Length: 405
Image (tube, rainbow, N blue to C red):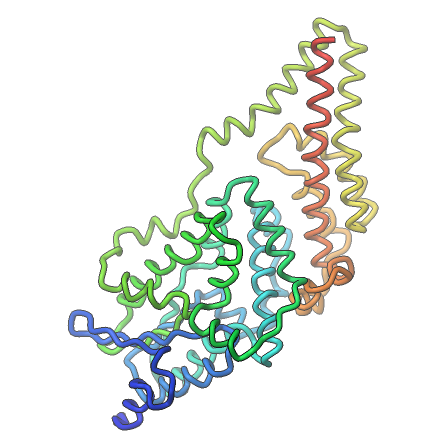
Protein backbone atom coordinates (compact mmCIF):
# COMPACT_ATOMS: atom_id res chain seq x y z
CA UNK A 1 0.00 0.00 0.00
CA UNK A 2 1.39 3.40 -0.93
CA UNK A 3 2.12 5.70 1.99
CA UNK A 4 1.13 9.34 1.87
CA UNK A 5 4.52 10.84 2.77
CA UNK A 6 3.17 14.36 3.20
CA UNK A 7 0.44 13.17 5.53
CA UNK A 8 2.93 11.07 7.51
CA UNK A 9 5.32 14.00 7.94
CA UNK A 10 2.48 16.27 8.97
CA UNK A 11 1.31 13.86 11.68
CA UNK A 12 4.61 12.51 12.97
CA UNK A 13 6.68 15.67 12.79
CA UNK A 14 4.09 17.74 14.55
CA UNK A 15 2.28 20.03 12.11
CA UNK A 16 -0.89 18.71 13.67
CA UNK A 17 0.31 19.86 17.08
CA UNK A 18 0.85 16.35 18.50
CA UNK A 19 4.63 15.92 18.11
CA UNK A 20 5.14 15.86 21.89
CA UNK A 21 3.17 12.60 22.00
CA UNK A 22 5.14 10.87 19.20
CA UNK A 23 8.70 9.61 19.42
CA UNK A 24 10.70 7.91 16.65
CA UNK A 25 13.59 5.55 17.37
CA UNK A 26 16.03 3.80 15.03
CA UNK A 27 17.07 0.43 16.41
CA UNK A 28 19.27 -1.98 14.44
CA UNK A 29 17.85 -1.00 11.08
CA UNK A 30 14.27 -1.04 12.42
CA UNK A 31 12.10 1.96 13.14
CA UNK A 32 9.99 2.10 16.27
CA UNK A 33 7.42 4.87 16.66
CA UNK A 34 6.11 5.39 20.20
CA UNK A 35 2.74 7.10 20.60
CA UNK A 36 2.18 8.27 24.18
CA UNK A 37 -1.47 8.50 25.20
CA UNK A 38 -3.71 9.38 28.11
CA UNK A 39 -6.13 6.54 28.80
CA UNK A 40 -9.10 8.89 29.14
CA UNK A 41 -8.38 11.35 26.34
CA UNK A 42 -10.55 11.76 23.25
CA UNK A 43 -7.58 13.46 21.62
CA UNK A 44 -5.50 10.30 22.16
CA UNK A 45 -8.19 8.20 20.46
CA UNK A 46 -8.11 10.48 17.42
CA UNK A 47 -4.32 10.63 17.48
CA UNK A 48 -3.72 6.88 17.28
CA UNK A 49 -6.14 6.53 14.38
CA UNK A 50 -4.48 9.38 12.52
CA UNK A 51 -0.94 8.12 13.09
CA UNK A 52 -1.71 4.52 12.08
CA UNK A 53 -3.42 5.70 8.91
CA UNK A 54 -0.49 7.96 8.05
CA UNK A 55 2.43 5.68 9.00
CA UNK A 56 1.04 2.32 7.82
CA UNK A 57 3.40 0.34 10.09
CA UNK A 58 4.25 -3.34 9.68
CA UNK A 59 2.82 -4.05 13.13
CA UNK A 60 0.84 -2.13 15.76
CA UNK A 61 1.92 -2.89 19.33
CA UNK A 62 -0.42 -1.93 22.16
CA UNK A 63 -0.09 -1.73 25.94
CA UNK A 64 -2.63 -4.49 26.51
CA UNK A 65 -2.54 -8.14 27.51
CA UNK A 66 -5.06 -10.67 26.23
CA UNK A 67 -7.29 -10.40 29.31
CA UNK A 68 -7.49 -6.58 29.27
CA UNK A 69 -8.06 -6.56 25.52
CA UNK A 70 -10.96 -9.00 25.84
CA UNK A 71 -12.40 -6.88 28.68
CA UNK A 72 -12.31 -3.79 26.44
CA UNK A 73 -13.61 -5.57 23.35
CA UNK A 74 -16.36 -7.45 25.19
CA UNK A 75 -17.91 -5.46 28.02
CA UNK A 76 -19.88 -8.52 29.18
CA UNK A 77 -16.80 -10.72 29.61
CA UNK A 78 -16.18 -9.65 33.22
CA UNK A 79 -19.57 -11.04 34.19
CA UNK A 80 -18.42 -14.48 33.04
CA UNK A 81 -15.76 -14.67 35.75
CA UNK A 82 -16.10 -17.53 38.20
CA UNK A 83 -15.97 -15.76 41.56
CA UNK A 84 -15.70 -19.03 43.42
CA UNK A 85 -12.52 -19.81 41.49
CA UNK A 86 -11.16 -16.31 42.20
CA UNK A 87 -11.71 -16.90 45.93
CA UNK A 88 -10.16 -20.38 45.80
CA UNK A 89 -7.02 -18.95 44.20
CA UNK A 90 -6.94 -16.14 46.80
CA UNK A 91 -7.13 -13.41 44.16
CA UNK A 92 -9.79 -11.28 45.85
CA UNK A 93 -7.39 -8.51 46.87
CA UNK A 94 -5.74 -8.13 43.41
CA UNK A 95 -9.18 -8.18 41.78
CA UNK A 96 -10.41 -5.46 44.14
CA UNK A 97 -7.37 -3.27 43.40
CA UNK A 98 -7.93 -3.77 39.68
CA UNK A 99 -11.57 -2.72 40.00
CA UNK A 100 -10.66 0.34 42.07
CA UNK A 101 -8.10 1.48 39.48
CA UNK A 102 -10.69 0.95 36.73
CA UNK A 103 -13.22 3.00 38.72
CA UNK A 104 -10.68 5.79 39.24
CA UNK A 105 -9.99 5.96 35.52
CA UNK A 106 -13.67 5.79 34.64
CA UNK A 107 -14.47 8.63 37.02
CA UNK A 108 -12.00 10.87 35.21
CA UNK A 109 -12.92 9.59 31.76
CA UNK A 110 -16.63 9.96 32.40
CA UNK A 111 -16.25 13.74 32.61
CA UNK A 112 -14.84 13.66 29.09
CA UNK A 113 -17.16 11.06 27.59
CA UNK A 114 -14.30 8.60 27.02
CA UNK A 115 -14.10 4.97 28.13
CA UNK A 116 -10.72 4.26 29.81
CA UNK A 117 -8.48 2.41 27.36
CA UNK A 118 -10.53 3.54 24.36
CA UNK A 119 -7.38 4.64 22.52
CA UNK A 120 -5.90 1.13 22.82
CA UNK A 121 -9.05 -0.45 21.43
CA UNK A 122 -9.13 2.18 18.69
CA UNK A 123 -5.55 1.29 17.74
CA UNK A 124 -6.41 -2.42 17.49
CA UNK A 125 -9.51 -1.80 15.38
CA UNK A 126 -7.78 0.70 13.11
CA UNK A 127 -4.98 -1.80 12.50
CA UNK A 128 -7.44 -4.62 11.81
CA UNK A 129 -9.35 -2.45 9.34
CA UNK A 130 -6.13 -1.83 7.41
CA UNK A 131 -4.93 -5.42 7.59
CA UNK A 132 -1.99 -4.58 9.90
CA UNK A 133 -0.88 -7.24 12.43
CA UNK A 134 -1.46 -6.40 16.10
CA UNK A 135 0.79 -7.40 19.02
CA UNK A 136 -0.55 -7.37 22.59
CA UNK A 137 2.66 -6.50 24.42
CA UNK A 138 1.74 -5.97 28.06
CA UNK A 139 2.22 -8.49 30.85
CA UNK A 140 -0.79 -10.47 32.04
CA UNK A 141 -2.63 -8.09 34.38
CA UNK A 142 -3.14 -10.89 36.93
CA UNK A 143 0.62 -11.43 37.16
CA UNK A 144 1.25 -7.69 37.47
CA UNK A 145 -1.29 -7.26 40.27
CA UNK A 146 -0.15 -10.32 42.18
CA UNK A 147 3.50 -9.25 41.92
CA UNK A 148 2.50 -5.75 43.08
CA UNK A 149 0.56 -7.19 46.01
CA UNK A 150 3.49 -9.43 46.89
CA UNK A 151 5.90 -6.47 46.76
CA UNK A 152 3.79 -4.47 49.23
CA UNK A 153 4.33 -4.99 52.95
CA UNK A 154 1.45 -6.04 55.20
CA UNK A 155 0.87 -2.60 56.70
CA UNK A 156 1.28 -0.83 53.37
CA UNK A 157 -1.32 -3.13 51.84
CA UNK A 158 -3.83 -1.55 54.21
CA UNK A 159 -2.56 1.92 53.39
CA UNK A 160 -2.77 1.17 49.68
CA UNK A 161 -6.35 -0.08 49.87
CA UNK A 162 -7.37 2.89 52.02
CA UNK A 163 -5.74 5.36 49.62
CA UNK A 164 -7.27 3.71 46.57
CA UNK A 165 -10.74 3.50 48.09
CA UNK A 166 -10.60 7.12 49.27
CA UNK A 167 -9.69 8.17 45.71
CA UNK A 168 -13.07 6.84 44.56
CA UNK A 169 -14.94 9.43 46.61
CA UNK A 170 -12.77 12.45 45.78
CA UNK A 171 -14.30 15.09 43.57
CA UNK A 172 -11.96 15.53 40.61
CA UNK A 173 -12.64 18.41 38.26
CA UNK A 174 -11.11 17.94 34.82
CA UNK A 175 -9.71 21.06 33.20
CA UNK A 176 -7.67 21.58 30.05
CA UNK A 177 -4.58 21.95 32.25
CA UNK A 178 -5.37 18.70 34.08
CA UNK A 179 -5.93 16.84 30.83
CA UNK A 180 -2.71 18.22 29.38
CA UNK A 181 -0.86 16.89 32.44
CA UNK A 182 -2.47 13.47 32.05
CA UNK A 183 -1.27 13.32 28.45
CA UNK A 184 2.27 13.64 29.77
CA UNK A 185 1.71 11.03 32.46
CA UNK A 186 -1.04 8.41 32.34
CA UNK A 187 -3.71 8.07 35.02
CA UNK A 188 -2.06 5.16 36.78
CA UNK A 189 1.24 7.03 37.06
CA UNK A 190 -0.52 10.08 38.47
CA UNK A 191 -2.26 7.97 41.11
CA UNK A 192 1.03 6.36 42.10
CA UNK A 193 2.62 9.78 42.48
CA UNK A 194 -0.23 10.80 44.77
CA UNK A 195 0.57 7.79 46.95
CA UNK A 196 4.11 9.18 47.17
CA UNK A 197 7.38 7.52 47.98
CA UNK A 198 5.77 5.14 50.50
CA UNK A 199 5.20 2.63 47.69
CA UNK A 200 8.57 2.13 45.90
CA UNK A 201 7.94 -1.58 45.42
CA UNK A 202 4.56 -0.86 43.85
CA UNK A 203 6.01 1.59 41.34
CA UNK A 204 8.76 -0.90 40.47
CA UNK A 205 6.21 -3.59 39.56
CA UNK A 206 3.56 -1.44 37.89
CA UNK A 207 5.86 0.88 35.91
CA UNK A 208 9.53 -0.16 35.84
CA UNK A 209 9.03 -3.89 35.29
CA UNK A 210 6.39 -3.28 32.68
CA UNK A 211 8.69 -0.87 30.83
CA UNK A 212 11.16 -3.74 30.46
CA UNK A 213 8.44 -6.23 29.52
CA UNK A 214 6.83 -3.91 26.98
CA UNK A 215 10.19 -3.06 25.41
CA UNK A 216 11.13 -6.71 24.90
CA UNK A 217 7.71 -7.62 23.50
CA UNK A 218 7.79 -4.67 21.11
CA UNK A 219 11.22 -5.70 19.84
CA UNK A 220 9.97 -9.28 19.41
CA UNK A 221 7.14 -8.11 17.12
CA UNK A 222 7.38 -8.81 13.39
CA UNK A 223 8.30 -6.06 10.96
CA UNK A 224 10.81 -3.35 10.25
CA UNK A 225 8.53 -0.45 11.09
CA UNK A 226 6.70 -0.84 14.39
CA UNK A 227 4.19 1.54 15.95
CA UNK A 228 3.65 1.17 19.71
CA UNK A 229 0.67 2.76 21.48
CA UNK A 230 1.44 3.09 25.20
CA UNK A 231 0.43 5.22 28.17
CA UNK A 232 2.42 8.46 28.27
CA UNK A 233 3.90 7.44 31.63
CA UNK A 234 5.79 4.60 29.91
CA UNK A 235 7.34 6.56 27.05
CA UNK A 236 10.54 7.76 28.72
CA UNK A 237 11.12 4.37 30.32
CA UNK A 238 10.62 2.62 26.98
CA UNK A 239 13.05 4.93 25.21
CA UNK A 240 15.70 3.76 27.69
CA UNK A 241 14.73 0.09 27.78
CA UNK A 242 14.40 -0.42 24.02
CA UNK A 243 18.15 0.08 23.54
CA UNK A 244 18.93 -2.38 26.34
CA UNK A 245 18.79 -6.18 26.31
CA UNK A 246 16.54 -7.76 28.90
CA UNK A 247 15.19 -10.76 26.98
CA UNK A 248 16.75 -13.21 29.42
CA UNK A 249 14.75 -11.85 32.36
CA UNK A 250 11.28 -11.99 30.76
CA UNK A 251 10.45 -15.34 32.35
CA UNK A 252 11.41 -13.93 35.76
CA UNK A 253 9.02 -11.00 35.22
CA UNK A 254 6.20 -13.45 34.53
CA UNK A 255 6.72 -15.37 37.76
CA UNK A 256 4.94 -14.69 41.04
CA UNK A 257 7.64 -14.87 43.74
CA UNK A 258 6.86 -17.26 46.58
CA UNK A 259 6.45 -15.86 50.05
CA UNK A 260 9.86 -15.75 51.79
CA UNK A 261 10.46 -18.62 54.16
CA UNK A 262 10.85 -16.35 57.18
CA UNK A 263 7.42 -14.81 56.54
CA UNK A 264 5.91 -18.28 56.45
CA UNK A 265 7.62 -18.96 59.77
CA UNK A 266 6.26 -15.69 61.19
CA UNK A 267 2.79 -16.58 59.92
CA UNK A 268 2.84 -19.90 61.74
CA UNK A 269 4.52 -18.54 64.88
CA UNK A 270 1.35 -17.10 66.42
CA UNK A 271 -0.85 -20.19 65.86
CA UNK A 272 1.89 -22.47 67.22
CA UNK A 273 2.29 -20.20 70.24
CA UNK A 274 -1.48 -20.14 70.85
CA UNK A 275 -1.76 -23.94 70.67
CA UNK A 276 1.28 -24.24 72.92
CA UNK A 277 -0.34 -21.85 75.39
CA UNK A 278 -3.53 -23.94 75.45
CA UNK A 279 -1.50 -27.08 76.18
CA UNK A 280 0.50 -25.32 78.89
CA UNK A 281 -2.64 -23.97 80.55
CA UNK A 282 -4.31 -27.38 80.41
CA UNK A 283 -1.26 -29.08 81.93
CA UNK A 284 -0.47 -26.55 84.65
CA UNK A 285 -3.82 -24.84 85.34
CA UNK A 286 -6.27 -27.63 84.75
CA UNK A 287 -8.99 -28.40 82.25
CA UNK A 288 -11.42 -25.80 83.62
CA UNK A 289 -9.03 -22.90 82.97
CA UNK A 290 -8.09 -24.37 79.60
CA UNK A 291 -11.78 -24.67 78.68
CA UNK A 292 -12.43 -21.08 79.75
CA UNK A 293 -9.45 -19.93 77.67
CA UNK A 294 -10.70 -21.86 74.66
CA UNK A 295 -14.17 -20.33 75.03
CA UNK A 296 -12.63 -16.86 75.25
CA UNK A 297 -10.62 -17.56 72.07
CA UNK A 298 -13.76 -18.66 70.21
CA UNK A 299 -15.72 -15.58 71.30
CA UNK A 300 -12.82 -13.15 70.81
CA UNK A 301 -12.38 -14.31 67.21
CA UNK A 302 -15.93 -15.23 66.29
CA UNK A 303 -17.74 -12.12 67.52
CA UNK A 304 -15.62 -9.47 65.70
CA UNK A 305 -15.71 -11.53 62.49
CA UNK A 306 -19.48 -11.94 62.74
CA UNK A 307 -19.89 -8.22 63.47
CA UNK A 308 -17.83 -7.49 60.34
CA UNK A 309 -20.11 -9.71 58.26
CA UNK A 310 -23.17 -8.07 59.85
CA UNK A 311 -21.87 -4.57 59.01
CA UNK A 312 -21.40 -5.80 55.44
CA UNK A 313 -25.11 -6.74 55.49
CA UNK A 314 -24.05 -10.20 54.41
CA UNK A 315 -26.44 -13.15 54.28
CA UNK A 316 -27.31 -14.55 57.76
CA UNK A 317 -25.54 -17.78 56.86
CA UNK A 318 -22.42 -15.74 56.08
CA UNK A 319 -22.65 -14.02 59.48
CA UNK A 320 -22.99 -17.38 61.22
CA UNK A 321 -20.17 -18.78 59.11
CA UNK A 322 -17.92 -15.89 60.11
CA UNK A 323 -18.50 -16.67 63.78
CA UNK A 324 -17.79 -20.36 63.30
CA UNK A 325 -14.75 -20.24 61.04
CA UNK A 326 -12.81 -17.26 62.48
CA UNK A 327 -11.54 -19.12 65.60
CA UNK A 328 -10.31 -21.92 63.30
CA UNK A 329 -8.86 -19.89 60.41
CA UNK A 330 -7.00 -17.73 62.94
CA UNK A 331 -4.88 -20.80 63.62
CA UNK A 332 -4.38 -21.61 59.92
CA UNK A 333 -2.32 -18.84 58.21
CA UNK A 334 -2.92 -20.24 54.71
CA UNK A 335 -6.68 -19.75 55.07
CA UNK A 336 -8.26 -16.44 56.04
CA UNK A 337 -11.73 -16.00 57.48
CA UNK A 338 -12.49 -13.47 54.74
CA UNK A 339 -11.96 -16.03 51.98
CA UNK A 340 -14.40 -18.44 53.62
CA UNK A 341 -17.05 -15.78 54.27
CA UNK A 342 -16.73 -14.39 50.74
CA UNK A 343 -17.23 -17.91 49.35
CA UNK A 344 -20.31 -18.41 51.51
CA UNK A 345 -21.70 -15.04 50.40
CA UNK A 346 -21.24 -15.95 46.72
CA UNK A 347 -23.05 -19.23 47.29
CA UNK A 348 -25.93 -17.63 49.19
CA UNK A 349 -26.37 -14.45 47.15
CA UNK A 350 -24.55 -14.75 43.81
CA UNK A 351 -24.14 -11.42 41.96
CA UNK A 352 -26.28 -10.91 38.87
CA UNK A 353 -24.89 -10.03 35.45
CA UNK A 354 -26.11 -6.43 35.67
CA UNK A 355 -24.12 -5.96 38.90
CA UNK A 356 -20.91 -6.99 37.15
CA UNK A 357 -21.66 -4.39 34.49
CA UNK A 358 -22.35 -1.58 36.97
CA UNK A 359 -19.72 -2.45 39.59
CA UNK A 360 -17.22 0.22 38.51
CA UNK A 361 -19.85 2.97 38.72
CA UNK A 362 -21.31 1.60 41.97
CA UNK A 363 -17.88 1.76 43.65
CA UNK A 364 -18.01 5.55 43.56
CA UNK A 365 -20.76 5.74 46.22
CA UNK A 366 -21.08 4.30 49.71
CA UNK A 367 -24.61 3.12 48.93
CA UNK A 368 -23.29 1.27 45.90
CA UNK A 369 -20.97 -0.86 48.04
CA UNK A 370 -23.90 -2.19 50.06
CA UNK A 371 -26.37 -2.30 47.16
CA UNK A 372 -24.28 -4.12 44.53
CA UNK A 373 -24.07 -7.85 45.35
CA UNK A 374 -20.58 -8.15 43.84
CA UNK A 375 -19.26 -5.34 46.04
CA UNK A 376 -21.02 -6.92 49.00
CA UNK A 377 -18.91 -10.04 48.37
CA UNK A 378 -15.82 -7.83 48.74
CA UNK A 379 -17.25 -6.38 51.96
CA UNK A 380 -17.92 -9.93 53.17
CA UNK A 381 -14.26 -10.63 52.43
CA UNK A 382 -12.71 -7.52 54.00
CA UNK A 383 -14.77 -6.85 57.13
CA UNK A 384 -14.88 -10.36 58.66
CA UNK A 385 -11.17 -10.68 57.88
CA UNK A 386 -10.51 -7.44 59.74
CA UNK A 387 -12.66 -8.64 62.64
CA UNK A 388 -10.73 -11.90 62.73
CA UNK A 389 -7.41 -10.02 62.91
CA UNK A 390 -8.69 -8.00 65.87
CA UNK A 391 -9.83 -11.21 67.53
CA UNK A 392 -6.38 -12.80 67.21
CA UNK A 393 -4.79 -10.01 69.23
CA UNK A 394 -7.55 -9.88 71.85
CA UNK A 395 -7.69 -13.64 72.25
CA UNK A 396 -3.92 -14.04 72.18
CA UNK A 397 -3.44 -11.41 74.89
CA UNK A 398 -5.97 -13.10 77.17
CA UNK A 399 -4.55 -16.60 76.68
CA UNK A 400 -0.94 -15.59 77.26
CA UNK A 401 -2.06 -13.66 80.33
CA UNK A 402 -3.70 -16.82 81.68
CA UNK A 403 -0.35 -18.60 81.51
CA UNK A 404 1.10 -16.36 84.25
CA UNK A 405 -1.91 -15.91 86.51
